[in-house]
Image 1 (cartoon, each protein chain N blue to C red):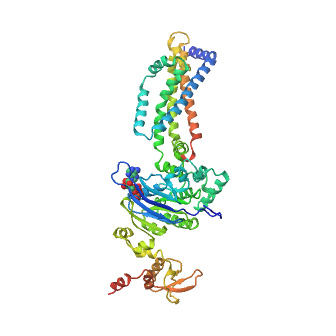
Image 2 (image 1 turned 30 degrees about the vertical axis):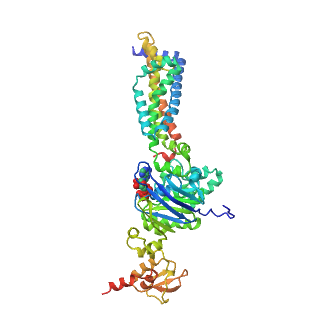
Image 3 (image 1 turned 90 degrees about the vertical axis):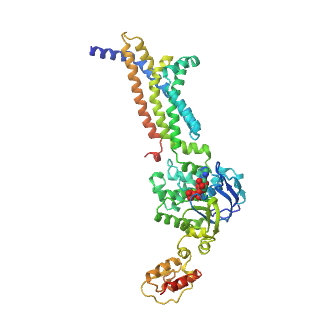
Length: 221
Length: 339
Ligand SMILES: Nc1ncnc2c1ncn2[C@@H]1O[C@H](COP(=O)(O)OP(=O)(O)OP(=O)(O)O)[C@@H](O)[C@H]1O
Ligand SMILES: [Mg+2]
């Protein structure tokens, strides 16, 4: 029984390798695109609110509440507005990825010592220059940690996006679950699930590398 | 400015007129109608107790804090009419917490203002090397380091170098040597004095420490609550004639000793150049305070005074030192001490 399962699974892998690779690639792309959008928007919101107590509390609380909406429900809600496929998937994923990024941007910027910002101001840097040359670079390791958390979160939620016809490994999982008892049902579910886990580990390793490459040596402890 | 030679721009004249700052939501002003005339190249010390408004007063000069009313001019230009960023690039600024950028190397930290002023790479690099040498940090060792790899005292030097980078005519320094131990502090003060002799910038220097003010300042402003000027004069005059009880209290004990620290031996009328027992001698350019110190060691026998070549040119004793200070109190104190 065991033997036949593994030979079956092996056969499945070789026969469907192209499909599997495509799904995995789509999964990764959809996660990366939403992450990119969430990073730009989240850092933007973080920059706007970190120094305004009310706006900061509102945006962090709001994003926190947002995170408790079941992903299935949110994606379903997006269908009438955005239809099916890539668009609602990316929108939904970006939404969930926002909270850790906003929160970490706010924390990172708040941790910049006031003396450092003041000396930037005192040298004639102006607020925008100070933000891009001093505050954001100093907050960067913390911001990046937020993006990394969001990446893990998105990997899992992206699998559920198959529900709105989204691309990625979720399709395989759903296919497997909906045809339980049929010949390849278990294989599909297994490949989808393990694939998501492997992708998540891979992306996490990539973040370790990105962190090393993009953090000033002066900030490494 | 019409400058013909390549010497660094000498300082600018700073004039504050009735400058007042009331922080939002505060009942009274933190700085109340502050007026002061600072000559080009002068080193002015603000001393006063914590919370009296020293920092607030200073920060209005580069508009980190905007005055509520009053006017501030630098070389006749109203600072409020200038673009604040342009203004600040012409004013060196050293804060107590140093505020180096931790993600930039020492060289990058010092290059900040030159870069803002679009200096070319070579000029900036040369300037960084020059400044590191000025503050006695070997460029080869330190230029590529990060602030966290430096000691507190070294960071403070970098802070000063960074403020000097674009050779600004005006420097604002808020307790720049505050975070160092007494020995490092004295060393930094000595280096700073040597530097200022060459640069003669207009400097406003905030400190808690009256002795530091005496040591460094051309003039000292003793401030009380709401940045009221209790006395604004040279260190020697403040020590000799404190304007009121507040200032006396600030001067603290040992005013006479502090005064002697400011006066070189050559100001005294020296006694005959008698051969003196032992090897106790004091240089003619040393302070009278040093001479007194040696007199204590010699047991009161006059100490030989030697010139730069080590030749004995005279001698000095307690009476001659007292005479320099005006000697109103000292003789009676001496007689009083005798049985
Ligand atoms: N941002 C601010 N908002 C409200 N009040 C302030 C602010 N900054 C300073 N103050 C108040 O203004 C007064 C003067 O403060 P300032 O920092 O100028 O004092 P200081 O003489 O520099 O003191 P220290 O020697 O402790 O640095 C203090 O009473 C302080 O509480
Ligand atoms: Mg202060």
